Amino acid sequence: MIKEIVKICGLDKEEIESRLKKFDGFGVEFSVVENCLDATITMTSNAPRQTFEMVKSRVYNAFEEEVYSAVEGSLEEIAARLLKMNNRTLAVGESLTGGEICSRLTAIPGISANFYEGIVCYNRMSKADRLGVPKSVLADYGAVSRETAYAMVKGLCKRPVDIALATTGLAGPTGDEGKPVGLVYIGVGGGDFITVFERRFSGSRNEIRRATSNVALFYLIRYLKGDILRL
Image 1 (cartoon, helix red, strand yellow):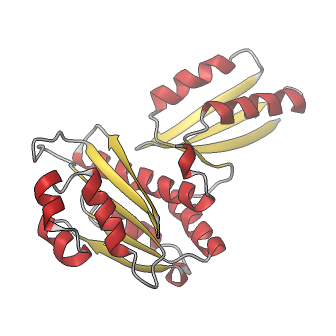
Image 2: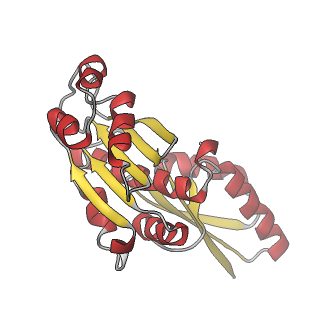
């Protein structure tokens, strides 16, 4: 029996299983465990190794934009490992996630070598006072915006920090600034390269917050691996 896993982030279980249907008939069985868009696909088979490897390669291609690991480990564990390998120093600015990302990272032993600080800038003025987000940006675009997420990352990237991660969005139960519940912006980067992703999540308040934390750590992993431009 051959057994391997692939870990992906960004899709719900229904979408994952829908994509996997194209691989029916090759003698490979799939099981999916998913929680707030963080998923593990387990592939098992009694087929010849050559057939299994062919299917595995096609699965990776089908989930190219969502894959983050082929080995066991949580998002935060893999992110911490990559920070250490790349000798990077991280800071995190959190609005709607309220410190969840920092809590998960600081649960990893040894993270202090690569984690500088985390700031929960929940109030819009905190974003200006603590991270230096221009008040004109907040006035023109709102606290939940691509521009604000970019400015949050920029404000965190001061020596010794060379990479930053930021979240801002609306977890509910109601929208704000004329924007819907579930709208989220996640910024990641450092130096001359900062990128911001817009996402729309659904579910309860806490499900949206958890999904945001998961996807933010996923983007951090992809950034540290050097393949975030493919997203």
